[in-house]
Length: 169
Image 1 (tube, helix red, strand yellow):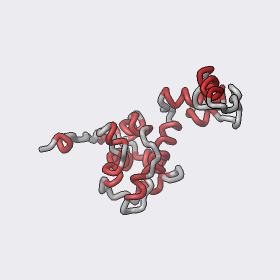
Image 2 (cartoon, rainbow, N blue to C red):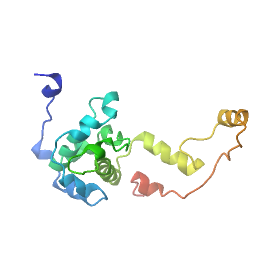
Image 3 (cartoon, rainbow, N blue to C red):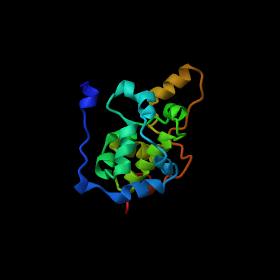
Image 4 (cartoon, rainbow, N blue to C red):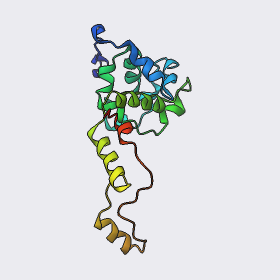
């Protein structure tokens, strides 16, 4: 038996959450999960699997359908999707797995599960109006390239931090 075939997921029926799938279905794109017939084209098309072969969108979808909420939303894997749509272009059922993944992430946020890196991005957007703070080095590089200086803190939009990070109070 090949190594990939040897890995099995244990389904603990005591810890299944039947409401998890319903929560995913309520988010835009989440309804597509019901069309998936688990062919695995999404996983075989995903460029992220070249970096981390353990990333498997098909398994995430299957675990979601089964109600394995704790395993799904506590996993870093749901945050890996790069939204490149390689899976969507190849899906024989016309499912957009990146939209399904986004719906799953939305449920994770509602449950208060947000990776530290995502929290930091939100903090930077809130404080600086950018994904990362503008550093002096960037300004010097721009000057050397005859590009205009950038304003260090630009508040382009208002962020609802509580909603983005699933904070209740």
